Image (tube, rainbow over all chains, first blue to last red; front, top):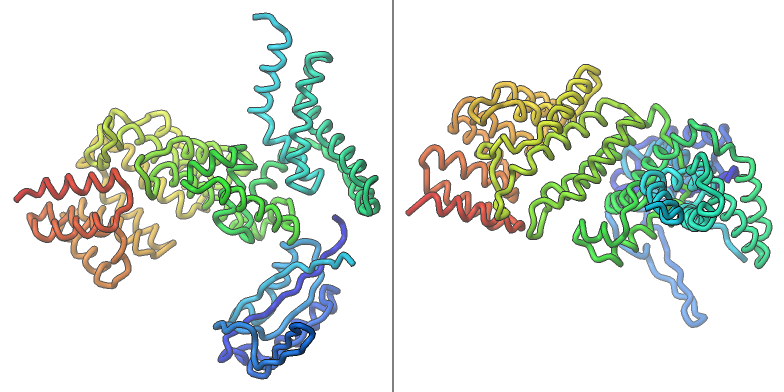
Length: 114
Length: 415
């Protein structure tokens, strides 16, 4: 139990609020997390109308425009972090600047059992 | 009755009642898993039934049960590890629990708080928090909880399984929150306890008005919390529950009909509960760190101290509602304040406020808003308005005794 876990923090925003938080603030947040050793990776994403969905059915690749489901808030970026438990992950997630405009979904990473 | 075997069985049952939840709380910390701890608890009591008649009851039954449960769990883990590829993981877990300083008195006392805060963790769904708290902290069976909440038992069992799964997979820690998080996390615990109490006190649907067992369980929980963490709002909530519960015998007639506060036989109110409730309110108020529960308890205390509805200090109650609105400007509190104001300044003054709230559309579907409006119209002799509002309330109620009460009110308006 002493080991740390990985959590993926998915940032959701309404499209018109995508630029409500300045990039510089997000960059500073990422840099701070990195220097504290809790950040594994973080990226902001292009708006959802640039997204392409890929599926493979019966061995054939099908490509469609857009995301799987239409929702009000859309995936705008992610932070992959390390934390000792959910409380620590929530503390880190609460410091992600877009949390005050949109929402941050905190998902524990599942280790594959190959 | 000197049959020693029987005596030991009675002792084991008594220890189960008084200590099984504490033992479970410590085992969860030691084993890091709810299911493993429940199994270990079972095994420990099974061993007690076998060994105590032969070897005598140990000096500290609780410590014996924890150490036996822990030993049985380690044993089971070793056995399982021997079978599968889990060997490495199994050994690592065993190493951790072998070195745990489990017997430390302070951590053992904290275990019950850890259990409460974990069951009421805000990352769990509200329904799941309630079910898990009643199951793990109070030790109710899934069937008992299902009956109290009018929910099918399989649904409830599923809720508990899912909550335990989330605690494990998302790694919700088994800990008392840090000072900085305590106020918010305590709020979540208090909310769960109050919801449980209300479920018993005023069942939101169904044929009986009070399902007292659930309320008693909530009061027991409230008491436990005050023992473990004597925060002002925890005392305020316990006071609020005691003061409401003190009127239980007076709020329904022998035939199960609802009786309004002002018409209740105050000789039936439970004076012990009132005394305890008032003492707790005073303690909470003097802390100056009180909140919503304490103020609501103070309102209930003013009612409890009044010899009759007319002799109630309505000015004090209106003042307390003003304080309450300062914390939480909710329309339901505004409504309650309007009713108190009607008692202080007359029905017309109260009615004007209720009409303003309803005109905003805030409480358009809230049965008690229409019932309160009807009552004030009735007192003003506006019979047609009273009838209309009673009928609106009747259409919105889902509770049998309340329906009958409103029907009696309508009939009482006359031709």
